[in-house]
Image (tube, rainbow, N blue to C red; front, side, top):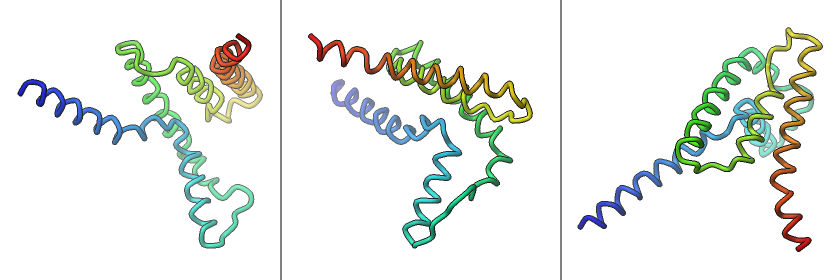
Amino acid sequence: MKKLNLEKTTSIFSSFSGETSFLGGYQVCHSICTVIISLLSLIGITIIGMPMLFLQKIAIPFWIIALILFSLTLFLYFKKRCISKNILIFNLGIIIASTPFNELGKPILIFWIVGGFIILLSLFLYIKPKIIQQLL
């Protein structure tokens, strides 16, 4: 009986985890744009240029949400160690590179460079063991 309750509890938490997995999408703005453009292309409408420019007005709230979700993910990582370290590093790079404060002017390039470097570092850390394994 106790085993059945444990399995049921595990099943409930597993379902909850699957249902909330969409929260890991830090590029909320990009995901929304891609879905809209994909749906429009299904009915034959091709979009060129900046069709979702209106989302720039809400880029900062989306970025703040991404930062909050990333913080929660970091908390889970340090608490349970159930998330890939390389994915966390990659997401950190994306969040830094996508800093939406265009008013900064040229200093925004620093965020792009640092974020891009962190993204490349995470890709290197992901690929390195696979290359070493193939060489051995």
